[in-house]
Image (cartoon, rainbow, N blue to C red):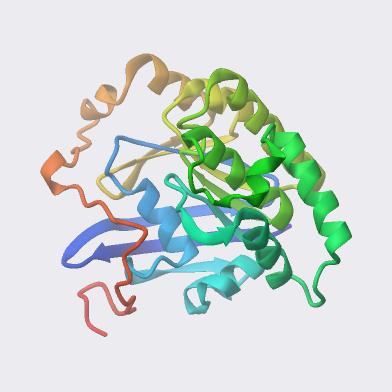
Length: 276
């Protein structure tokens, strides 16, 4: 059994502290829902785990089976079994979807995959998620609809076969039929190889398909409530207002920080006070 462990994690963007002491343990085979109001740190946590350079870890640790994830480059994290399905998949002009996916697969192998085997796997993955195979020959995500971009992320996940998949609102932009198709593919992967999932979503229907055993609510960079699937149901019915009765302080809209995936800021790791 593999284990991804986050301990007392503090993360900043520039001079703004976003995560403020997050603790989370995910084992293979488990499904964790990560919920909370927009702009309170859910995407920050996933981006930090994957190694986005705009997020500075000022204190705390992230380990994968005892290995220091923060000491790994992004490609090393991917090869170690981590995967991030993005909320806003990027377009890559000039690079075909199939070339990108084949390069990603080969980066995880000692020997390049044969063209025949790759085409067979790619064809099946496209069929499984209900994508037109013509999209394999288009530039990466260029001209794709929102739903096609999200299903293309699932194609990538199916080809890379990660051990820990982080899905950042992978359900947004999907119609009801595509939502079920995506959920079925995720559940099939979970069954096949005890895939661990961290799922950010605001929608009870999608989480009902995946049925997480663990639910964590992040408000203002802290996990303020934890439980099982009953928390998903409670949020669907009551929103987050009930947390205010427990003296949870919500971040103001103007305090929220949004990061572009195109940012290329240098990630420097220091202590909580920002010293190197």
